[in-house]
View (cartoon, helix red, strand yellow):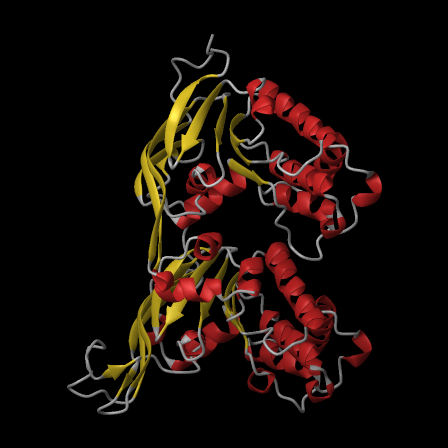
Length: 281
Length: 244
């Protein structure tokens, strides 16, 4: 049984720590650690040896409690943060042969703009609140080397249309928009350069149910129509169940369990996963 | 009289055991021990037994919803050849679910805000068919399953139990799976709906679909199954041909 698919994204042994680490806690496993915090030197081990693959057209869910390292992982993948160590390969970049984390910042910018799109939980991080909505999209298009105003205008309108932002509000700034609309502008922005990989960090957290539904429907539709691979971080198991094919469960910076989403939900193995699943309403 | 005597079985289960370790409750529950069975192409095999005897566990192990703890389930795939489902990768299982193995339970697990028509169309599109083909096949199967036309474009959450079930079977059937797992598809249905399901199953038998089903209703089973297994406390207590 050989592999019949090539992953879009491969992450190997990603580590991220805040703090230098001391002789007591180095290596990540020691008595001085409380959860993932070293009591001696105060180092936080946010991601510990995280490895996974994302395949074409698939939605990979990541669940875990607050502080388990989900967002740090996403920030590392989008180069918002430097990793401490680890490797990541994207099949659309240099045939998946180059470790993204060792590329120059110029190359990293290229990858961010051409191969990935990211939607942040907090729209303040993902959007310029005072720019117009279409300007936000244009910014990303320009970053990817476009300079034709007409083209950017039509692409921007097309994208805002796709995420159901009324055309006549395209020149309005996102600060005037509701939370759900801001998330949708972020999604439009993330999609602007046809990225094969989308990173979604808690996109529906804090939205009311009906708005959450419209954002989820949008994501599902995009995935189906465009065949984009998505890494979806959420602590909402309902969202994961609806969207994800496979799921990783994180705890204290480590991946403690991974598998088919229905298997995680119906036959969880790890005590924490069982606790999580049994907490589902 | 068994047609497929010399053919390689499409599914072969050996020494299957499964237990659940509930860490937070400090409990260990054994669901199935040392189960072995074979399923040949075109056969319809039934599993009977009391609630809690481990019937569904077997189906869920085959479908990959449960992690296989011990033993092997060898499935003869069109794409991969012989696959031990206990060792298959997650992506292989996902592929098989999309293309080769169907699962029907008594509950309809649907995406919210998805109409009956979309639900079936999506199942076809998953197999990389084009939209026009999917639309045509969807209409064909929905009318075939006698789902009232005014329901096609409404949400299945409002359907009756029988309608949901028929939609559920339609969605699984439209993919023409090589192996169909039926998890008590007739439970909680009235007599007429049961008959309809029965007719559908008869038709599937004629079309040569291999099926493994769990039924409570023994009478219902006896007229259809080639063979049946009876489960008691996680083991097969009796296996044989239904006509013997």
